[in-house]
Image 1 (cartoon, rainbow, N blue to C red):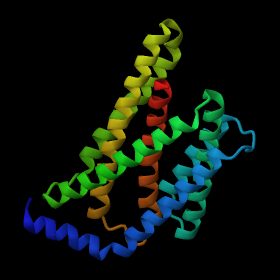
Image 2 (cartoon, rainbow, N blue to C red; image 1 turned 30 degrees about the vertical axis):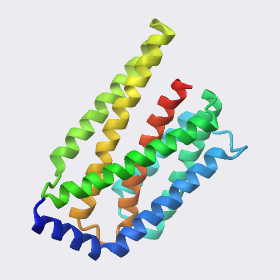
Image 3 (cartoon, helix red, strand yellow; image 1 turned 90 degrees about the horizontal axis):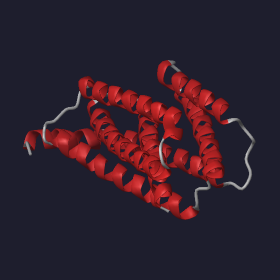
Length: 224
């Protein structure tokens, strides 16, 4: 590990300590909102397609529109609530049990924290991940989404055991992909000057964690 690069990373972390504290506090609160809504006994009866449209619209506004941080935080809270409703619907439709959900949370948290450490270590070793790496992740995600859509359309043509194996394979690829996203997010946050845009950084981590969780819960559910 390059001593000068390591010193630069630790200096950046020290200088951004207040910023990082706000990022992780915001992340924790938003994940708690999603978890609470997901596990409520009753929720508004919203159509899953409408929920996804609202989620896409909200994340587009958060990512593309310049807004004051308090407004972004409010929209982020709405976003977290909507994801809670989505997971609530998934629990009802697929009969996820508490054990599979807890396994998924533990798995997502373990991968998330591990890849944060890897991201810090790479940066300390002088490895700076740029937009090319981000583009590779983005196009890999697009490819995974397309493959899953094709599988969804043709799912009725295979045996139940084969379909379960394919779903597990998709989940494994999804976990690997979003593990790399956590690494990339960590590396970029410490490189980039977000100034006071802590909500943007927290949203990036939130999406990484939620996608890890959704892939883990799909995988663990198939195992029970």
